[in-house]
Image (cartoon, rainbow, N blue to C red; front, side, top):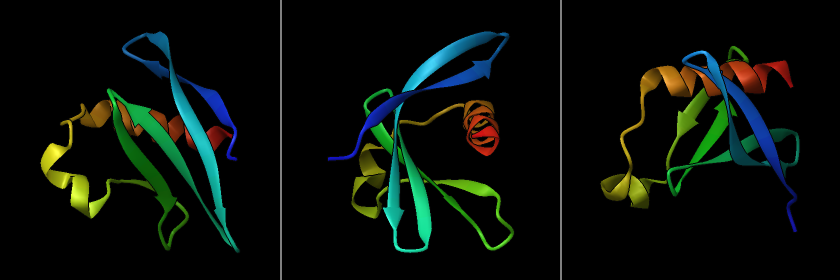
Length: 80
């Protein structure tokens, strides 16, 4: 079972905590972060920068998130 941890994210001058999991697939990894009930996966691109992804089948139900919040989560993940 994957262990859930609290990811502290600085957004709009205050720290927020989000449930997150580290998912490992051989040589690669992803972080699963729950935002308002929607699971968002963060994976590294070819340049090593994290990008946010949602499951293709869930795209109709996707909660629109503040792009700055997604950027703040990427910044927090980069510091790990």
